[in-house]
Image (cartoon, rainbow, N blue to C red; front, side, top):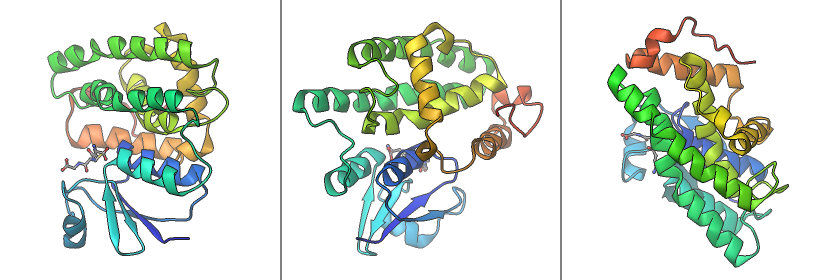
Length: 230
Ligand SMILES: N[C@@H](CCC(=O)N[C@@H](CS)C(=O)NCC(=O)O)C(=O)O
């Protein structure tokens, strides 16, 4: 099998997406964490947008963009995470296309610099949740997006749903309770061992630390660097 190196910032949800796919496929890989504020020259040379993730293959080729990485891994390594049926696969791809919009709501709220920006961004979350709630209703009875089988859609959304809960435990947002299918899906994803690059309390503490370091509005509600999560 090829040699894989996944270049990462420890708390990056897009890296986590790629790592989930690697773990679902039981691929051995080197996980190399670099510092966002000190990106080494070798990394800048292989990352066109200077962003993580980058998947370096056999010290020769560098893939970037988490969706392209996930699709590549799915085309080259079993088990296939995309559904076999082309229509279902197209629907799945349409929902992974929605991920950046969904992610903006969650990330933009956590990283809102002011109270006004926080509430403005938080108010947009239910519309995105509603769309997913409807998609889940037509897709399957769970626990995952397509039913019993974990898919690339699950790998894509898991990191952002996890961060929604992280933020909700810092400053109550109270949105997901109104979307029972989405909530159950999120909980099933978080219960999946492959979703985690770090033990959840460790990642949650890092998330809180990031909010504080960047002095985001929500950070004033952090009473302890340790997460309330179990
Ligand atoms: N669309 C990209 C997003 C990747 C991304 O935004 N990564 C962030 C870290 S979570 C990054 O590297 N940011 C550095 C920067 O913007 O300079 C993907 O799916 O891989």
